[in-house]
Image 1 (cartoon, helix red, strand yellow):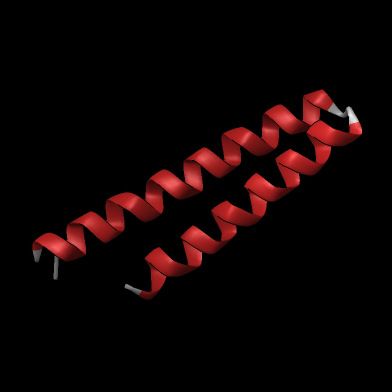
Image 2: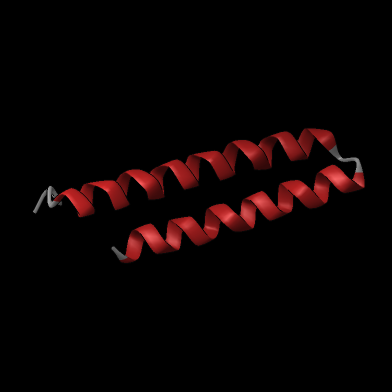
Length: 58
C-alpha cells in the first residue's frame, strides 16, 4: 500500500508543477507534466484498487 501513497504524492507534485507551468506560460512543459501526473495517479489508483480488492498478487 505504501507504493500507492508514494505514487499518489508524486502524481500530485507533477500536477502542481503543471499548474505552475500553465500559469507561467510554459505550455510544452505543462503538457509533459500533465501526462506524467496522469500516469502516476492512474498507477496509484490501480495499485490501491488491487490492494482493496485483496488481489495483491502475492
